Amino acid sequence: MIAAPKSVDADLIARSRASQLADLLQRIDGADIALMGPDRAARDWCAADDFHDLDLWVSRATAHVVDGALTHLGAVRLDHGAREPRLQHRQWWLPGRDRGAIVDVTVGDLRVGPIQLCDEGSITTSVGVTVPSSEDGPTGPRFTGRAAIADLLVRPLLRGRVPEAGRLDEARTAWQTLTAAERGRTADAFAAGLGRRLTSNVVDILEGVEANGALPRRARLRLTVASLRPSALRSTWAARDEIIGADLGPFGLPARGALVAFVGTDGSGKTTLTERLELELDRLGYEVDREYLGMARSNLPGLATLRRLVRGTDEAALAPRADNTTTTNPP
Image 1 (cartoon, one colour):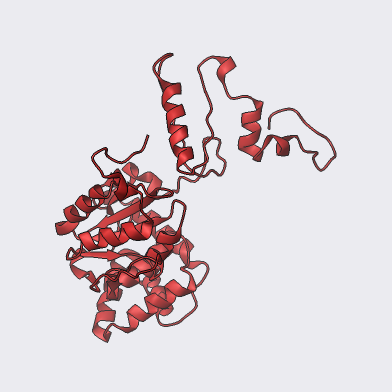
Image 2: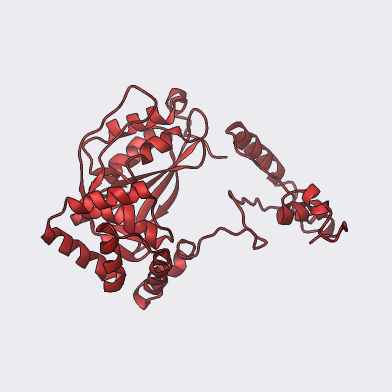
């Protein structure tokens, strides 16, 4: 099961997210860091009781400082993305007073897949950490200039969505702070990955033009083309779920959460492990469904399981259909 290292003081992981974030920011104060996303992102993370991510950027030279601070707080590393030429990132699970949380740490350049939006040397940030007395959550350094525009506007477009109004306003504010020469260099940097036409659309949005609903589809197409170039193909295959979202379950149906499988011979401890995992996740507030899928035909999922996967519940599966008939057969 996921748990904090035994050497970590229990008091460290029994605090609110706001307290944890304040401690983290104070421990890494002086490192090259920035809280990513819109201005409210840190406050939303502190207030959330779900899988809400906290996105943090750190320079390569000071990444070890963030790693050490998160480890001290009882965080456990879940993933380490280090494939070139792609985003370098580290994902951590941080246990807390209520429900655990995810901290995503971007290291170095800002990228989406193989498309580089802002190299580390061009990233600028604000300075200072403010810790309010309330539970609203602390604030820390933020991106400025080109990095802010890449984070607030371009990354969402490449991921298939138009940013919400507040996020767009912050991107436009960052654009207005640049000189004419800096705007030209920013557009040139984006064009290297996005192409001139898409970059022109991005600049129009920054100048106040309403975002076209078709723009995210064009941006995703650009990302797909870049991902299939010979120079990026190997890393694309290794990280293919980053290009095509893994949002479908094993039956090709929309799914949420994670699917965990324990495989082993009879008596190897599968049931014991799954029961312990289920108890721990339940304690943390997560919903868990457990099924036994053995090799023998009698152990395969029953009709109730299939009905629930396809229609949500057994009751829905057995409910009268439009033709006023009822079925007891699986879909």
